[in-house]
Length: 256
Image (cartoon, rainbow, N blue to C red; front, side):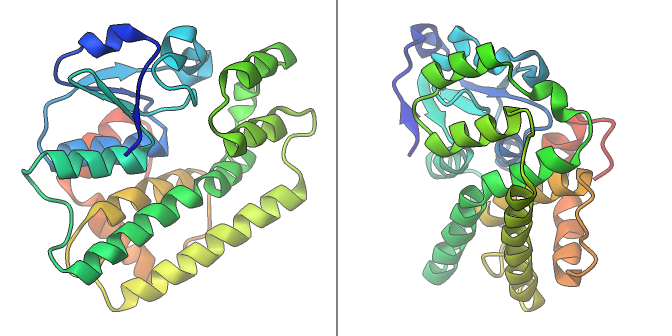
């Protein structure tokens, strides 16, 4: 589990479930969906990423990676969305989001970790294709502060160095990211040809881990037309009440 000991000790006094998040963060989306699927009460701490509210000393004292989301559960800090959703499902019994069959549980974790492992490829594609994100580039001074503070995730640091460089992402970066995404969706489409959900017969954390990726890529105009079974699965997930509560209600102007 991604449990952290915060240097910002104030959060250790928080009671109940508190989520530090951003509306358009795909990682935050999966945690909000999980909270809603399980019917858990939680308090929102919405951060404005465009204003750099995730880069403050106060927030880095909670999450040293300087990313959202971060969950605080009665003073216990958990980071990394894959770990957070697994933590929530294991700790809180209501509305289990894992299969009962052992082989399907293994399949669920495989898809959850695949979503995490390919997160930066999806992030690269999105940052390269969605207009208006140039304002998120860090200045040289901001980048230097970020290097000093963000010492936990070297791949994330490299991502921001490339994005914030004068030339931005190279064509090779974008091509490589696109290939990773294409391969994932081809595998998902094949899996969903014979299964309603990614883990098998039941909606699970696997589906929650992946649906935000499709939301983000849809905004980046990724061509989904070659994946018909994936499209049907996407429609089924989006019809669940948790999708409205965990995604659409936080992005009122978005067309999923």
